[in-house]
Image 1 (cartoon, rainbow, N blue to C red):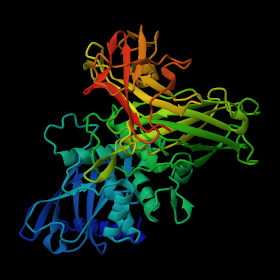
Image 2 (tube, rainbow, N blue to C red):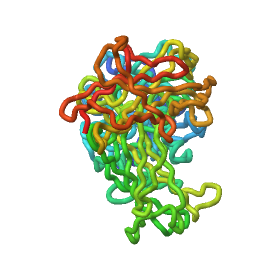
Image 3 (cartoon, rainbow, N blue to C red):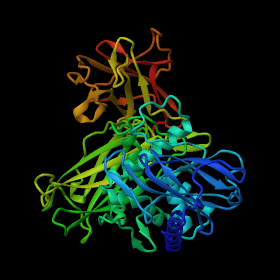
Length: 585
């Protein structure tokens, strides 16, 4: 906070008190005159009850108003409209997610800085004062121009606050039938900051100062918990730099978007916008992270690569992606073998998607291959259900946040949670080119009821799992088949492998018979001459394989028809048989 501003503000309060004692009415609060313009506004971080003070660009305090349930109206002298204006809010509010009562003070207010000529004389103006605007105003108070502060904010968070919107408290507002989309978006963003505060474990005092601390962090253009080379620390001792090192603040914000969208605190049911979202902040393949074991002394480096051979592509893709996890001792650089290590005795892996629409789900993945454990190398295949973002109006907008959790069994950790955790945040991208390494099919006779209570055909997916040249001729081809269901104990939607004897939960559905066949002849789906070759299931549930398949080209793209039959129902797409397309290695 700018000390000069606080001093000027305090002096203006003493002057106001003196004038009030003399019966003066020098600080306009109500009434419209030809020399002033009415500005209505909202003070929302939760609905604030308190006081608004307005200053000009030289820190001269000239207007005040009462804030009731987040609403205020103030008269601005017309001769002030040609300069930048500061709106400062003190008082208190109920935090949406934590339920704590937060007190806003002169040192930690909500605030808004508007550009010169934002308001026109005689025309009703709008002033939304939120955590968003507070960050921008704080950066201005700390020396940035308003334009530079808005740019820094937009670069970090993907949007600039809409000063035409009228935000509301998403906890106390039960109906959103009259609010505009812009109003609802502004309210949603207020709720996200509340969710982030809850996720960070902040006290009420911390919540009041969080916007200012984040503005301090953004002063150097990077959201990393560091300001002027020092950790950003809140009153309770929460260290944003330390939190950023365990899970980047940008990724925490993305998770908060997903969490608030589906939160019980989102009583209004406001939704995340489809645009103006935080940019994708991702860990590239080859990223290494260090975790500290429960004993507080030993550290382990965890590295994830995504090796690939044609027809698969490097990087995280929304087809089968192989993850190579390498564990080394941070002090000695020696490989960590879970079979012999003194402290690490197991490894687990879980992909998880935090959807901005408000729900969360996993993704199909195979068993971890530990045959190279002596080298500290562990591999696992993941079948990503969706990319992180989609192209919209020429810009890739995120749909959620993928989180890869690597969980190591830690004998030095407390028995209540005997693990050490490392999290990676990949940017899962669409597969490039014309190859089809994933096919989706349904059959109208095979239905399920989703989490919204809608009954519809159950989707099955056939993923290319591997294709390699066979030494005896032809190719060995394997696919992985998955479907979907519900299991609330597993977090909601599940995507299990398809195999005989598996029972899909919620609603209960038993897979009694499964067969998988492949055809390379290119004949039409219903052609009686079409030749199908069986792909028996391997020892891995859901994996079906044929050995020595002939006829695959290594110079041109092949089209393979896949016939997946479950309980007598053949799964088809809109064009008929499911198809995979690729050039064989």
